[in-house]
Length: 244
Image (cartoon, rainbow, N blue to C red; front, top):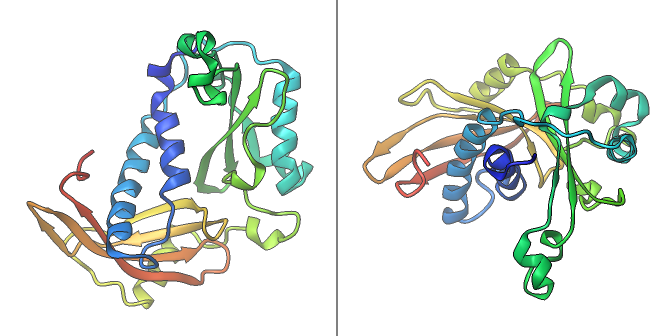
């Protein structure tokens, strides 16, 4: 049966991905600091994602609705080829007991059964693309997740958003050409979804300062399709977040 303890890392990662994909350098100092830290957390929680100990049988009708939601953005053929249903990570979340007794005191989402359906976005030959896609539905198959909030590119209207010619090597070269300093440690690169641009990007960051109060450096955010430098700015992570 579904376990919050087992599934918790992915829920935390998903929350961070949704809330903390603001590109570096576009907002005030505090926002940049939080973004730098949460990018680290996102990587840690993503790698902590583990299959459920006792997967349940998900109705085919539920899986079909979730798959159709992805297909609305990428097209049916693309969805079938590159988005793979992961039954060992998909589950039925039961309502919280307290919410059943006092539904008025709880968020509606905690007062109903929810299917949490996970797909992996993977493209052969592009090993850097390995992204979990979480879609939440109610017990009747109604979508709770808003499709425009998925980390799924809009391939139908913009096919170039789904080609990903920029790999890690190219991203590092682009960051170097953009003036990213060598820094005090090896550069950290992440391929991730950015909700502001609604696109997959590369984040390449260095480390310039490391003190008892935290860490800071510079980051270059690069469109993974066009190779365009979207942001070239600072990141900062204070002591309350480091190593979280």
